[in-house]
Amino acid sequence: MKITLLFPTKNQSDKLLKNIREQVIPYFDAASIAYDGLIAASGSTQAEYRKLEEGLKSLPMNFSLLPYDPVPGKGHNLRSGLLAAEGDYVLFMDSDLSTSLDTFERMKPYLGKADMVIASRYAKDSLIPIKQPFIRRFVSASSRFIIKALFRFKGLTDTQCGFKLIRGEVGREMAKRQIVEGFAFDCEYLYMCKLNDLKVVEVPCTWRNDEDSTLSAFKASVVFFKDLLRIKAHRRHYFFDKGKNDADR
Image (cartoon, rainbow, N blue to C red; front, side, top):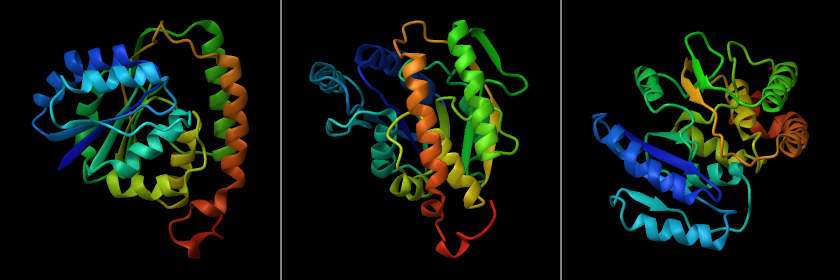
């Protein structure tokens, strides 16, 4: 069993390289599991991308950087990474490691048993020592309400936590069908899981807000909600088996 650690990132080179050296490598070296690392940084500035190229030279040989592409969007980087990943499973996480790495210990029992394992900030036993500002919490609550109304995901409390484990072959199939370049890709992938009767498991986590984040909650939410509607309208394209596309799901 091999895990590919995927880091979709944009203009956070210093933080990502520091976290990989000081946290990711020590943790997974001690985890008794084969792994490699893949950084997808398309949409970053040329200066930030060059930092990653230089930083990669000091990382172990099992870490690599995908070629630069000017197309922005976290969803774009995730798709590129999933298509390039060689692991039996792909674990993607944010540059700031807001979700504690030990969440992986809760995911490990589902290796070989689940198609996707997702961390949830709102599951029982989850901890949030550093919370988001009020406006972000409000936008998050609104998003969860709309997602629940549109997609009716059963048993899932948090679609947007940036720490997910995906079976490699399943991830490649979903990446080929992905249409969203931005932050709504989580819902797109979970919707594909639902439509194709794939097994999704949710686990609790410890999550800390990144106080350095510069993302505009309002601007991001407008694009996010538009993408949710695009995902819903694109339903027929998401079936792996075209014979199932008339099912009521």
